[in-house]
Image (tube, rainbow, N blue to C red; front, top):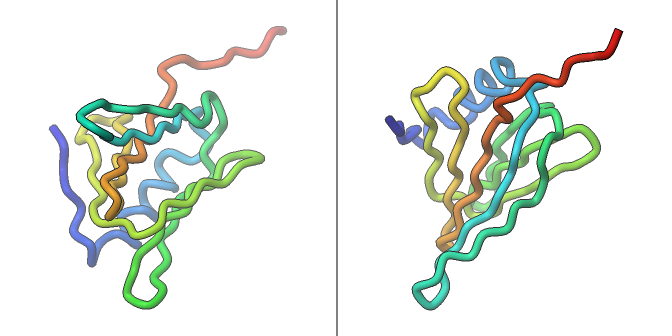
Length: 113
């Protein structure tokens, strides 16, 4: 089930989310509907999550997602939703109708001994 996070709770929620999921391997995609067609762009696959934060400038919120060797920013964020599942991801919606989807890889990389 998907849960909408109240805007007043974003900073605290993302802090806890980052602590709980820090180091997990991720997938990050951006989805948008243009002329009735869903376009998706998967930006990264497999990078460990370092953290997520929210910043407010001139009344507009932006969210920054930091990965190992990469950072992605979403400007003019309108909604953040999270899956209730233990390893659920985030959907971050912006004012332009784009959705950034953060998901976690379901595999564990084992070291060779």
